[in-house]
Length: 201
Image (tube, rainbow, N blue to C red):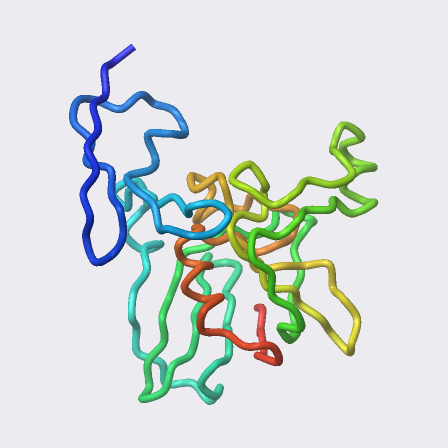
């Protein structure tokens, strides 16, 4: 095992862990710091481990959708949040595996911090070992935040949420939900309001 030493560094109110030595090829090696949050801090991912195209970027937007709309391109693995002045913020995402993808329009009806995960009946049929309920926290597959998507007043059971598996960003890895890095869903959660349109293609 390689040794790893750490020291705390404060930058812009965010506490980073400065790492020296060689990190182990483990989940912990993906993280370089944290965003203070309650009741748990949000881990910051080492962006050098994320392919360039899936890192947060501000991009031009020339479409017709109004500011505040969320656009999701499953094939390209991007989520764009439309801002004003012809621009959008683009994030890399993970999408549903083949056969577990969905599309169309929905709205954000509910938002949750450190959400509880309740696997659907279909998930538990496919994998009977899944628990009935997982409380919010660092080990929860929904991550630090979740946006709940509704259509015609009904819960679609799909979410835009964080993840404790950052290596899945850019891949078809979920059971249909849209995964983001925890720090990215934290940012989106602070901007998006209930009633926001979500368009998935």
